[in-house]
Image 1 (tube, rainbow, N blue to C red):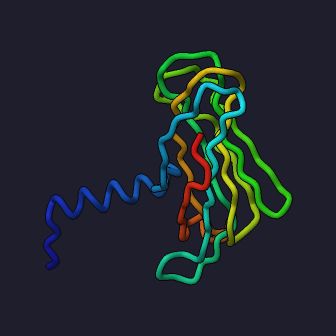
Image 2: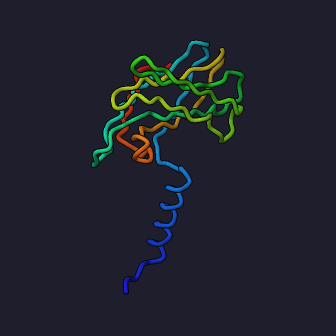
Length: 153
C-alpha cells in the first residue's frame, strides 16, 4: 500500500486544477513611462524550445496592467516579429488588479520586440505578464522565455 502525504496530495490537486482551468506560470516585468506622450519601454523577448524538452515555441502571449498613479493615459503592450504586430490595451482603468485581454503573436521561436506605450502625456506605471508557449498540440505548454530591456523611458 502506497502512503501519500497530505501535503503531496494537496500540491498534486492544485497543479491538476490549474492545468484544467488554463492558469499558467509566466513571466512579468514592472516599469514606468515618463511624462512625454512618446515615452516607450522596449524589450527583446526570446522564445526557445521547452526547457529540458523538445516542444518548440509557437507564440508569445502578453497582457498589460495600468498601475497607480491614476492618470488619463491608457497603457498598451505591442509584440512585433517577422512583420506581424499585436497589441493589447488595459481599458479596465488605473490602479486595479485586472490585466488587459491576452494577445498572442504566433511567429514561433526567436526574438520578439515587446514595446510598452501609452495613449497621451503623463507619467504611468505598468505591469506586463508574458510567456512563450508551444503549439496547440502541446496544450500551449510554457516554453523557454528570456527577456532583455533595450530602452527605458
